[in-house]
Every structure is written in structure tokens, then in C-alpha cells.
Image 1 (tube, rainbow, N blue to C red):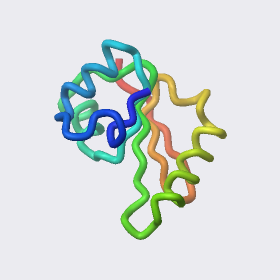
Image 2 (image 1 turned 45 degrees about the vertical axis):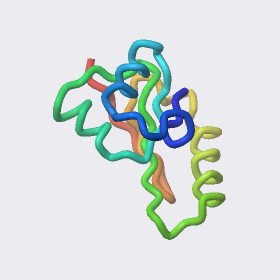
Image 3 (image 1 turned 90 degrees about the vertical axis):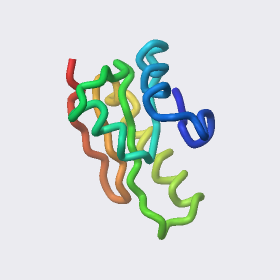
Length: 98
């Protein structure tokens, strides 16, 4: 898994996406651009999936971490092949294009 904020801070988006595809890694990000790259621009997506969290600026980092952790505990088996969006009260899934 690549956690963009932790592992690739300062790296531009497309090399991160390419790495996730090449190494078949799950991509965890808050960056909204990845959805546009994959769905609008038709960039290849990692088979392991993309998980985007949209938790805003109001929540504290610990609260965000708890929500993300709970989403992974409940849905980790569902992320492969999906673009998942974690929100405060739900997780949405969209099939990644082939």
C-alpha cells in the first residue's frame, strides 16, 4: 500500500499512480485528482484499488485515522478493483475501469 501523505509527500501524482500500478499496490489518498486521472483521463489504475478519504478539515487527525482504520477493518477485502471513497459515515465503491 502507498499512503501518499506518509510515503510520497512532495511527489507528483502521476508517478505515484504509475508506481501503484506497476507494483500492484493499494493507493490511499485524500487527493481528489486521482479520480480524475483514472476516470476522466483514463490513466491505468492499480488492480489492488484506490481508496480516497474525504474527511474534511474539521476532524482531528486522530478521528480521521479512526474512521479510515474502521473502513479498512470492515471493507479491506472489497478494495481490489475498486475506487473506494471513505466519508465520515459511509464508504462508497465504484468499479475501476479495465
